[in-house]
Image (cartoon, rainbow over all chains, first blue to last red; front, side):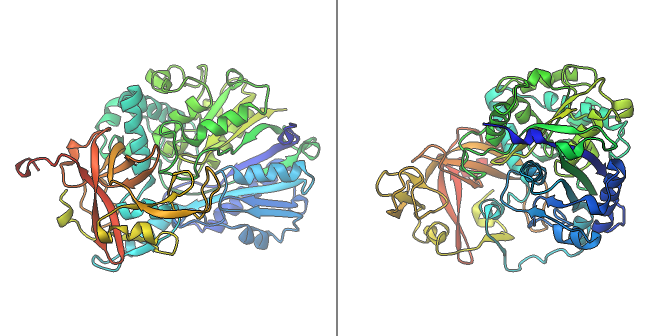
Amino acid sequence: MKALEKEAAIIAAAISQVGRKLDRGALDLTLDAILDAFDQSGLSVRDIDGLATWPSASPTPGQVSSTTNDIKEALGLRLNWYCSNQDAAGAYSGVINAAMAVATGQARHVLCFRTTTQFSARQKSRAAQPTPGRVARRLAGYHSWQDPFNALSPVNFFAMVTQRRMHEFGLTREQLGAVVLNTRKNAASNPHAVYRSPLTMDEYLAARFISDPLCLYDCDAPIDGAVAVIVSSLDAARDLKRRPLRIEAMSGAQYGRDSWDQYEDLTGWAATECAEALWARTDFKPSDVDVANLYDGFRIQTLVWLEALRFCGRGESGPFVEGGQRIGLTSELPLNTGGGQLSAGRLHGMGLLWESCIQLWGEGGDRQVRDAAVALTASGGGPRGAALLLVRE
Amino acid sequence: MDIASMPPRSVLPVVDEMNATFWQSGRDGLLKFSRCQACGLWIHPASTICRRCLSRDIRPEAVSGRGTVVMYTINRQPWVPDLTEPYIVALIELAEQKALRLMSNVVNCPVESVYIGMPVKVVFLQQEDVWLPLFEPVETPPRAAV
């Protein structure tokens, strides 16, 4: 099978102001990122003939703050192809769809974006607290199997996975903490990160539990912000301002049940299947990867991805990250180089993709990984996952 | 926590034709799931076809209500005002089939007493038109210890 994504490349990646009290509208933030992406590439509004985001909507306030309709109308785009969908492999579905669109000639330059305003949405919902004793709110879909049991945050699910991994593999809080400390250290030189002060292991271990065994520092931070990425056909990507970052392989495979509770594999989840399909599409190997930005909405997810992507064996991610020596900026696998979502904020995987691009363009400043030419970015948890392997042309 | 003293849930499922058997099965005290009458596969959430043998002869059947805690967490965060934390969120695997599971709460025991591998049995919490299947230890600790 020919992996047609090799005909697609990222030619711009931009991030808006990111923060917790910005007092900026969602559309403004999205446009900041989009206009910056135009500047980076030298493309204009007229060059864009495709538009994509994911997801199209969300029951969680502030998770989807700009839609394809918003952006098309704001910029007066002339589109040959556009897509935003709901049931897909997660945060990189927009980019994956865009790559397929340019590889099949539906579009030449696809603008992909994602905007979240979960911080301001949360402030608003706190101001309008529900009154106790009211009739219960009704939910359908996968939330209906969790929320009635007061599993009201995804942290409950990932805390259970963490507990299970402690039970099965002997994972420790110190090992989780090593990843947290590493991301904080990296965040110090990311001007867009929300938490840039260093953290000590003692501070990590003393933090209050949210859902045992995950503590405050194991959970990412809700923020307001936006990321824009332009995906172009490789032919159209040449001779632009930046070196194209070719999509060497991409995957959003799902072989198990599309369910958070019926999924058979309790410690590997869809990440394992996604990674298996990813490596089957390329001659590159895990040892070729210079930079890895792996999802860390909740701490355990990074460890699941490390194993799924075969940087270590099943159950071995704890010892792999312990002490942080193997995941630092000058180590064998520089991990979450921009601070991840824990320190840089919950941009739902798109911030991790932005950081991978920055590294491949050599613009990481003090956090730059030397000669980074191959980057792996993965996002998702539970029954869904997506991964992108990028190579600098 | 004791099931009798629990505050009402802030969220309940939409009850429709497909899931009513499950969400209201506690009405007669029995936990019921869809089951393929051709190959015996338990199917959750309910479907009109068996994903294993493609038979369309699917009917609700009662299970034993016995299961095992395969994952759990003690939730300590007050997500909404009318919660009583800490409480247990657990993934329960039913005795009848591998990976036939429910996300639920383990109740009627101290939160610290829950463990992976703990045998549990169903106990229903009714609210409005829904019977939520919660679980309690098979061996209930003595009252004084709670």
